[in-house]
Every structure is written in structure tokens, then in C-alpha cells.
Length: 492
Image 1 (cartoon, helix red, strand yellow):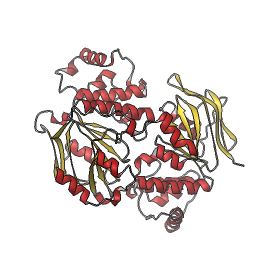
Image 2 (spheres, rainbow, N blue to C red):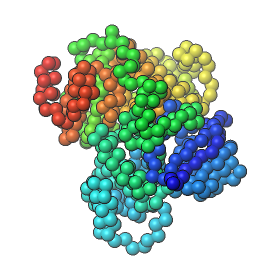
Image 3 (cartoon, rainbow, N blue to C red):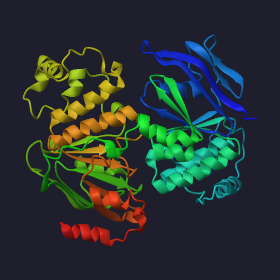
Image 4 (spheres, rainbow, N blue to C red):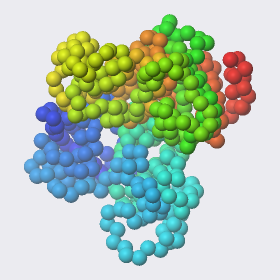
């Protein structure tokens, strides 16, 4: 008989004056990989907070291993033994991997540390899952995939009841997803339970035993393993083939508006590509580059070698011709202490004179764009309104090219669709869009060309038809010869 590891009964909790979890019911068992699909972001953070930190409940109960750990009647102070993985935020980058696993954890009471012993133990744990690692490396020297496996091992060493994996597949190459499946299944067979939060059909169907669908703060359906893929694609997701075609009338083939030529800057090594007016270029990276270095070059840092060029580069306010939408823009691109209209008009002063001398002028712009007076603080806006503010701000800037950094990472289904809607609007207006992603299938619906940076900085370029023919019909990118790039360059 399977042992229950987590049960949430009619959980209701509030925040910002509204119900974020509404009569929420959830159940999973020991050794199970339970998928959780956020059709919207409503209540997702609160769900994690309840499981990890025993958030205050308005109503309901939470049980872990059949023990009542939280109830609306009394809020316990203790956290649960639940390990949540989102990127590598639990690791100390400057310490060796072995120290992170065995020393930096709750409950450790040792005084004397034998480095050789803990390094051997960590090496053995990696070998058990079929991986080798240099245990003397500091965490910052590991690949993203190695960091994730390190965190799973750390959770197992700490005897966690549950491990929450939040959209980690969006940071991994497809090859690494298969290795992740092997590692997760190994620990699941040993009794470790996983909650895998994602909106990617392939990952969910390959990794999960069951999948729960979450919408508006409640579970609306639970799918068994054999029904995951078909049900998600048929009733809840939209495969990229079914998305509306991007209006391409504004694209002018052959008119180059941006060029990156053999740029070297920190992690950026010999990067070259160009973009045409109104084109959507999808850039897939195999964890070669730290894209913060590329943003630094766009912002004015001088590369060690090479150069970047864009149309009208030498004129006044030329840098406003380039816009960057950062990853997780609601956290990285908004200023909560500023008003809505000030956030909206932040990059607009090059188009409207004396903009910052008149608040009424800024209010008028915001009112004309939104059709209403917005008086609440930016931090009180809904998630959709925050995204709308960011994308409208970029459109008012009216750049020639937009670099969109990992727009589909760690977002729900509705946000993905909302992002595509705005990116299509930019393309229709003749603005070029460059989408940076670690998952080559993200953004394909919008792309005119696909640029793949493979292992060891290899580079291949496809048009959309060629990409569909080669990739979507089962061929491996790594098996293609380097002549593909030469052939594409010859055509230019």
C-alpha cells in the first residue's frame, strides 16, 4: 500500500485582500513524481509557501506523512522538511560542491571537517546516478545541469520529505532533460517524492506519474500518466503549429538593421549573427554564454574583439533603437516606488519633449493607452497588468529591435500566450525581435530563422521550414555537419 506523503484539504489562504488559494485540494504519495501545471500564476507562490513554510491559512489543513503540520486554527512556527529548487538559489557559489551538500544544511552539527572524505562521498553519490563530477570545483564553476543534480542530492542527504522542482527544464538542453529523468526516477524509486512544476507537455509526460492542473487557485483536474500529453495538448495547451501565423507584411528581407560581428567579451566568445527589419530570430544557446555579458555590450561596454552595429547607430539617442526585455520582467523592469505613468513613460523622453516637466502629460499618455485612470501603486497591479505595462512601455519606446531574454522560463501557460501576443504585435509593426532561449522549441511559432549555438560554441542557422523538416521529424541537431552553417552563409 502506498504511503501518503502530502495532503492538502480545502486549503484557503488570502493575500492583498483576495483569496489566492480557494478550496485547494492536493494529494501525492511516497516515491511519486507529481506534476503541477499552472494554467495561470494565481496562487502558485502561495501553494509553495504553504508546503515549505506553513503559510497562515484562512481555512483547511495540511498533512505531511500523515501528520498534521498546518491548520487554520493554529499556525505552527516550524518549517517543513521540503526542498524547493528554482535555479541555484539554495547553493553558495563560492564554496565547493561537497561543502554545499554536507555542511550547508539544517541539522549539521559537526566541528571537524575532513574534505577528502566528503568529496569521496559526493563523488560516489554522483556515480550512483551515472554522472562524474570534479568534487573540488566551486559551485559557480559547475554547469546548470550539474547544479540541479547537486541540489537533488543535497535534498536526499537532508532526508527531505518532498522536493519541488520549479520549471527547471526551461534552463536545460533536451539531452539534459533525459538525464534529469534518470536521476529523478532513481531517487523516486528510493522513496523520495517530487513535485514537478512546469507548463511543458513533453517534460510532464516523460517525468511525471500524474499531473494536477491548477487554475485560479484550485486544482481543476488530475491526469494519470497515460493521459497527460493528449489531454494537455487537446484541452489546455496550444501546440505551436496551431498558433496564428505572425503577420509578415512589415518584414523587409535583406534589410539588415543589426549585426553582431565576432564579438568577444567575458563569456561571449566569437559571437556573430545579424537581424533583418521585422524579423523574428530565435536564438537557442547550449549554456555557452552568460547573456548578462551580451546585455553589457548592448549597453555600451566595449568588447575585447569584434563589434556590434545597428542602423543609425551614430545618431543622438541611438541606444533607444535597442530595447531589452529581461527575464522575469515584472521583478526586474518595474519600479514599485514610481507611479504607473512614470513607469510607462520611462523610455519615452526621446520622443516627447519636456515629458518630465508635466505629470499631467504623462497621465494623459497612460489614460489614452489604457482607456482608464490608474491610481493604484504598481506593486498592487495584477500579474497581467504588470506584463501589459512592461510591453506597452517597450512599444512606446518604438525601438528598431527588441532582445527578449528567456521570456518563457518559469511562467504559466496564460503568460506564455500573452507574451506571444505582444511579440506578434511588435513584429507586425516592423520591429525586429530576437528571442533568447535554452529550449529550442520555445518561440518556434514566431520565428523566421533559428540560430543554434551548440556545444563548444558551434553555430548553425536554419530558416523555419528547414528547422521543422530536420528537428521536428526526429533528426538530432548535434548530428548535423558544420557544412550547414557554411551553406546558410553562402546563401547570404
